[in-house]
Length: 68
Image (cartoon, rainbow, N blue to C red; front, side, top):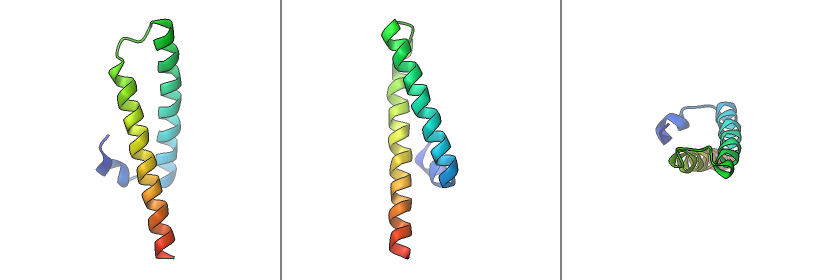
């Protein structure tokens, strides 16, 4: 999902997506340790997606504090 698509989502949707991705990474780390993970690139992409979501949430928080 691109950053533009993420900016259109509400805070609750972003937090839900963040939670899902964090759980997905936990599962992938376990599979990686046990040798069952075939696509290591997916782990990297999930980490980047988490960073995008956290950046958007922080930008929204800053915008809200400035506008008050």
